[in-house]
Image 1 (cartoon, rainbow, N blue to C red):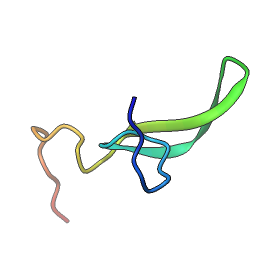
Image 2 (cartoon, rainbow, N blue to C red):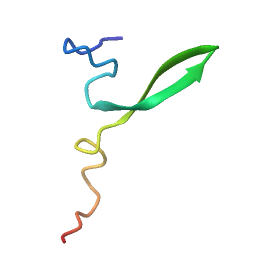
Image 3 (cartoon, helix red, strand yellow):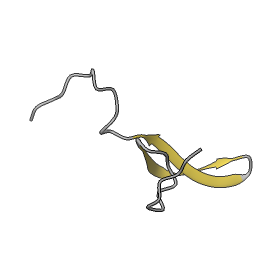
Length: 46
């Protein structure tokens, strides 16, 4: 399990979205980054 060197607790391609409790401990809640999320989805234009 590799962490990024810039003190980011999440893996590459993931970003932290707050914290959560796991096994009685508070841990970072890492979710897939919007940049890398499903490339096949249609993009919306404003």
